[in-house]
Amino acid sequence: MKFAVVGAVAAALVGVVQPQCFTDNDNFLIKVNTDLSGVTDFGFDLYRRLDSPSSPRNFFFSPFSIWSAFILAYLGSAGETEAQLQRALRVDGKVETFKIWRALEALYQTSNNDYTFNIANRAYIDNVLPIRPCIIELLSNEFERINFRDVFSAVNRINNFASTNTKGKINDLVTVENIEGIHMAIVNAAYFKGTWQFQFKPTSTASERFFVTPQSHQMVPMMNQISAFNFGEFDQVAASVLELPYTGERVSMFLFLPVQEGPQGFANMVSKLSGNNLRAATHKKNLKKQDVDLKLPKFRMELKLADEMIPALKDMGIVDIFSSDKVDLTTLGNLRNLTLEKVIHKAFVEVNEEGTEAAAATVLTFTLRASRRDPVVPFHCNRPFLFLIRDNETNNNLFMGVYRAPDAARS
Image 1 (cartoon, rainbow, N blue to C red):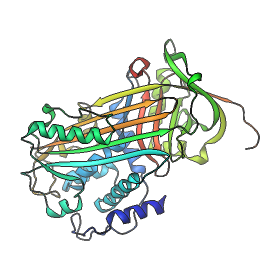
Image 2 (cartoon, rainbow, N blue to C red; image 1 turned 45 degrees about the vertical axis):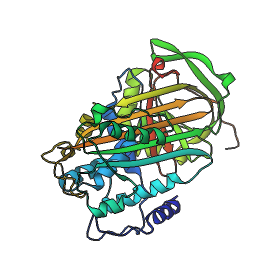
Image 3 (tube, rainbow, N blue to C red; image 1 turned 30 degrees about the horizontal axis):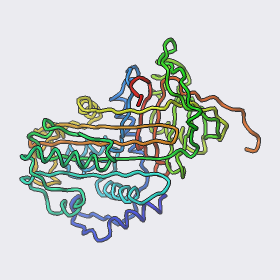
Image 4 (cartoon, rainbow, N blue to C red; image 1 turned 90 degrees about the horizontal axis):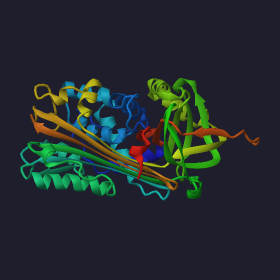
């Protein structure tokens, strides 16, 4: 994988002039660091602030989409705004971050017959904003000039970008009210589709009980199969973990089923989740191939996050970018008071017998202001569980979700 990423970043940066936008010694062609554990840590940190373990609703989002959108803002930041974003996003400086960002873009644009994952970024910049020429040159694929006074046109362009790059799964990302008075919008769109390596038979799907709590249940369409899966039990996350690979095994869904039943068991699992614990629980060497009787609900979720985003991000230490008195985006240009006003995230996922389809879009709006067969292990997801869609080669969590409310997840 390291060679693939190094090759991807080299190809992505061929012909790029080194205009020293970020430092006096920009060098984009040195070896890129392929460790994306910081994205994992960012995702779990944000998840804990957006979803309470005691919440009755389902939850699904793409930490990678949000991270990617904020990377564009980070590249244009300076001073304390830059320092806050760097800490929260878990990155090591603009040159290194830019290389990783470009490498991932090139990697995910490479055609793959086993699965589809696309990611696209766009920064819509008001015609009146003075942007530094070197930034426009460096980010020419992402920057697009726009007249935000023509609100309806701006809304259509942003929504069309999100819809096109999520195969029509994320529509109406923004409204006229979201766009009025703004001068810059950073948009990220992500789309995934994969088929299970071991598909469920539709004839095996049956209505079964899902225990919302140990005392109450709802009937759900439950998929079922007995197959050999990578499985493990981990005290450090208080959960059993199962890897459900997609065709090609480059991407997998990891299921985290709390050891203890009921709301307290789920809360205990969430409290123990961290980047380090996750990496241990999903590492191939810590999982054992074992015959498993797997039951998994067939479901569909859609979620919009808006008002809760800014308090969560501020709690993570991203503060100055929301303050017109403190924001510093001067790496972009002479923009002392271009202030982040809204963060909107929409996500979609559908899990069925064939595989998974998932999409997400994020918009940031700114305004001037062994041979022996082991026994079959039951892994019945008939109570609240957490799931990830994970790029196994980069250890990158593309999507994350919680299934706990069957009525809200039916097609």
